[in-house]
Image 1 (tube, rainbow, N blue to C red):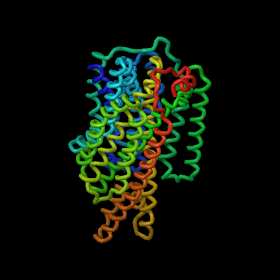
Image 2: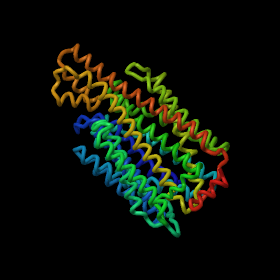
Image 3: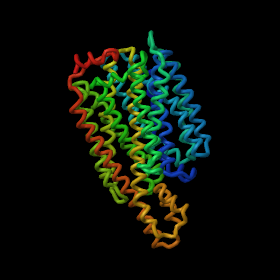
Length: 511
């Protein structure tokens, strides 16, 4: 049990940093003078390198020892956090966040692989994986809570300093209670595959984030999207031809593997993107402080904590398909409710229930889906399996912030731009107003005539709410389609402990 607590603490440390910066985005925007694109990069620089290095980290853990890789990850993450805490420019912050993501990739798959290796009895393993998945969900929504409290008392640098003592505690606990586990005959590290995967994912996310600035039909966006497609296709070809692939893509022929992986990705895509813009909504539209905004993220955690054990129990008794589909359905309902939120929407009767339902939905998705995905792998494949499971989360989250954030930015700038036509605003002020809702509010505050100022505030808020509505409905559609897809494609009769060496035969036997 002590080992599980330590592993969950290490997991909490790196997962919480996916969202801990979100509450600080308005402060960062003002102090670092950056728009939505820059803010997206301060979030996605972490998730991008996190996702890009997960497969390599899982492979290294199998080869040299999962506890050793966990050690390296914790130390590097703590050092990267100290580096981020000492930055003063956007470029420095993005670079430090990227470094943190690399070492987070060493921590995350090692924690899941060690949990699965330590708890070998099926019922204990299922409970342990459920706890691990629940902590991952709570960590995501816990980020805004911790960040809100810190920002109410300290500068934005504190959201990174807080990681250092937690890393030291996790490092000590790992040394005391976590045993070493490694594979007797590990796979070789596929360096070309690693480089292709990083390049493909990075170019894809860059194209999406920068599209609102350059234009969705611009040559910059088209070239980046084409290069990303070529890189990802080359990665798949490389994995099919090499003897020791970084990721055996044949795994995705097994429905009991690819469907839960896709469901996790859809859940995190929607929630990461939603949290990104909903924290802005609370501060820019509702006028809440950072602490008040953080407190309003707590219902997500309440939903996850209440639903996680129920979801795992249903999954063990009747199979994974129903709880995962229900989870995506719950999230779909929550996003649909949030799509109509404005400055007058009642928090206790509308927003609060919706956020609890979203949290419960994520718990129903990630716990059973993670347990099914890992249970279909042999012991020697646990490292890469954990990395695939974690990659679906991080890639889904990075794309969620990129896609939904870019959609929000495009709709907002498209709505506010016509309002500026014919005004006497200087170009720098107009550019600031178009860049983000906080820029728009700052420009509106400079207008000396009360009547014109009120009209400007209204225009900025309405433009943002239009964008938020569009992104919420997108998340609604994605989770709704995902729920239907799970019911259609995920077999209700599930096999267990399969090897990736013979995926086609396994699928015929079990599904």
